[in-house]
Amino acid sequence: MYFLFLCTLKYFLGAALSQQEIDSQEVVVFQNGLEGYKCYRIPAIVKAPNGELLAFAEARRNNCGDFGDVEIVMKRSFDQGKSWSALQVVADNGADQAGNQAPVFDLTDKRYPKGRLFLFYNTGTVHEQEVREGKAIREVWYKTSTDNGLTWTEAINITAKVSKPNHPAINPAYRFKEDWRSYANTPGHGLQIQKGMYKGRIYIAANHSEGPPQSMSKDYVAHGFYTDDHGQSFKLSPNVAYAGSNEAIAAETSDGSLLFNCRNQSGDAKYRIQAFTKNGGETWSEVKVMTDLPDPVCQGSMIDFEPKKEKKVLIFSNLNSQTKREKLTIRVSKDDGKSWSVGKEIYAGAAAYSDLVVQKDQRIGVLYEKDDYTKIVYTVFGYDWLVK
Image (cartoon, rainbow, N blue to C red; front, side, top):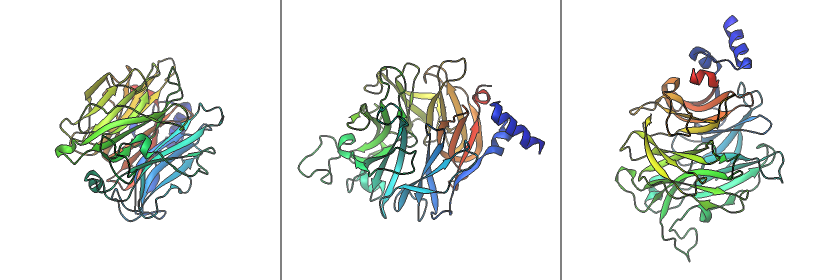
C-alpha cells in the first residue's frame, strides 16, 4: 500500500521514478484477441488540445500479418494514460487494409481555434511484395476531426499529390518519370512545426520503393511530404540519399526546423539514419549513419520536449540491440540530434514499435508493442528520470 502511495505521490509531483515504479504504472491499451480483432500493431499517439490522449493502432481482424482485413482504431484517455476508453474504428477499407496511421493536430488554423486533428493513412489491396513487383499500388489518404476524434470527415485521396506511381490505377493517360511502388507513412505521429519561419507546417515522414525489387531492399528510400496551407496543397521533401532508408519520423528542432530519423531496411549498418535540414525538410544538408543509435532494423519514435530552465531537447525511443527486437530504450539529444545519450531502458524483454507523447503534466508517455506483439501498452516517465 505504501509503495502504491509513493508512486502516486511521485506521479503528481513529477519526480523521477525507479524502473520498478515505471513498470507498476504500465497499462495495457490494446490486447490481442479482444474487442473483435486477433492482433493489434503499429502504435501512434497524440495529445489533444484539451489534454486527452488519443492512442491509435492497426487492428488486424484475422491474424498478425501486415495485410488483409485491417482497420485503424483509436482509444482515448481522460486521465493521462491511467485508463482508456472502448475501441473506436476511425478508418476502414472493407476487407482490405487501412493502416500506417499518422495523426497530427493542426493548432495554427484560425478557422479551428480548438484545433483540427488530421489522420493520414495508407490503403492497400495486396501484400507489400506484390506492390513492389508493380502488381498494385498503395494509396495515401487523410481525414480530419474537429472534436478530438469523436467524429470524422470523409477521407480525401492525395496519392497523386504525394506519390509518383507509374501505374494506370492513378491515371491511365499519364505516367510519372519515377516509378514509386510500395508506400507507407511514418509510422507513428505526424509533426506540426510550432515556432519559427516554418510555423504551421504539417510534415509527414514517409517511405516508398522505386522500381523493381532490389537485393537488401535497396529499392526502398525514405522521403516526406508537407503542407503549409492546412491540407489544401502538398509538397514532397527530397528522397533521403541512402538506398534502403525506410520507416521514418520527424521532430521539430530548436531553430524551428526539423530532424528526420529513419530505419535502415537494408541492414548494411545496424544503426539509425538521420537527415539534417535547416529549411523544414525542403532540402537535406547532410545524411548520416548514427552510430550512437543502434537498431535491429525496426521502427523508432522521436519528439521534441522543452524542460524547465533548459532549451528544447529531442527524445527518441527504439530498440537498443542490433540482433533482436528487444530492450526498448529512451534517449535524449541536447544538440538537435547531432549526438544522443546512452539512454534509459524502459523494458528489457521483447518489444517492437513505439510512439512518444508529452502529456499535459509534462511527463512523457510511450505507447509500445510488448512481448512478441501480443499487446500494446502505455507507460510514463519524467524527464528527470531520463537524464539522471
